Image 1 (cartoon, rainbow, N blue to C red):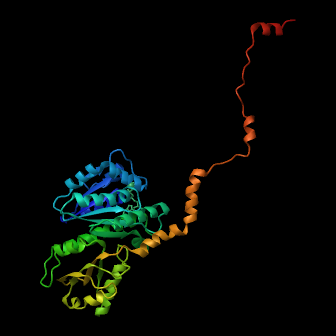
Image 2 (cartoon, rainbow, N blue to C red):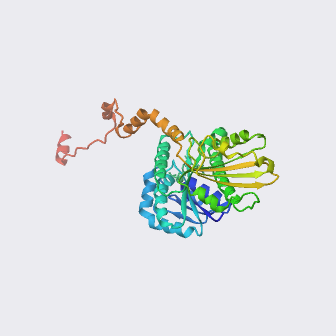
Image 3 (cartoon, rainbow, N blue to C red):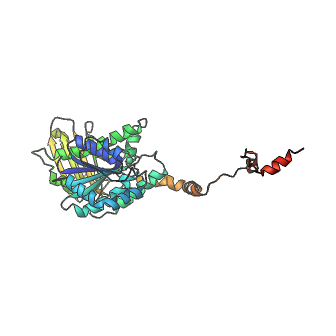
Length: 369
Ligand SMILES: Nc1nc2c(ncn2[C@@H]2O[C@H](COP(=O)(O)OP(=O)(O)OP(=O)(O)O)[C@@H](O)[C@H]2O)c(=O)[nH]1
Ligand SMILES: [Mg+2]
């Protein structure tokens, strides 16, 4: 896993780096909160921004942390990753640390890590998060989408896991999202190490795809029950909507990979024009065919996709719908006060009696008979 490095920023980023470490990727993490980062024991290289204690879901604190410490942070990243070809910065878009730090950090690293391509693993929150988190996510994704020369952006959609497992706890959803995204990246990287008589998918092919600017997804599906080219194409297309990533919404894949593993007779049913009928044929396609007696599976990598407008509008929708209520909450914060109706009653409270001191002679004369 040496050619791809994972840099986690914030808590969710650190958790992804933790799993990546256990899979053999080079990793490092950055956080404003030492306690969060220390739990990721498998990540050896850690940088905690001095003087901070979390960003409390405030993106401007994450931004400030980079502004004040960018020299040390860049130096830390340069020292942490050796000989990688692609650095993926992992973070959640709806907190404060990862969401505030990552866009500016990625932009700086693009100048400071010559020869290394940089991409992102950005977590899109599930439907249950509140207004503050939604605002963070939308701002962060907008910033990420505007960075020039950025390679693949993987948008990990916590809602995809929530949809499949509505009863799961947050913790289970997070863990499972983190596992699936790293598993997907690990699998395509591992394929590049295999050899085949029929068509190799090598590391240069993978890097060509992953260095494409825009949104990238990786998905896999088994083809066991498919009998025709149409059925195979439709299974593949379905997998683009059911992966851990934000579902593909629109046409316009720029580069793609299709990797087939399984028996030879099934390989014939993969018909490229049919597979790309709905999303449009990519500019370049890199294929790999690995014949074995295992269950037939197709892994697709689609790169250069647009940012998913429909998914983003769903995040923004509930903000729009509650615009007035949210604005009145903010106004209330600074204007609210309570007026008591019994201010007259304060006089009833015991008061320390004020002792009048008189002269001795006046007291003596008071008792005189
Ligand atoms: N997939 C996944 N999502 C996570 C994980 N942890 C947190 N999240 C998501 O990230 C959001 C919280 O972001 P964090 O990463 O905890 O925030 P942070 O970057 O540490 O920023 P602050 O805590 O505000 O300083 C949650 O609302 C979830 O959407 C994780 O391990 N995996
Ligand atoms: Mg945190």
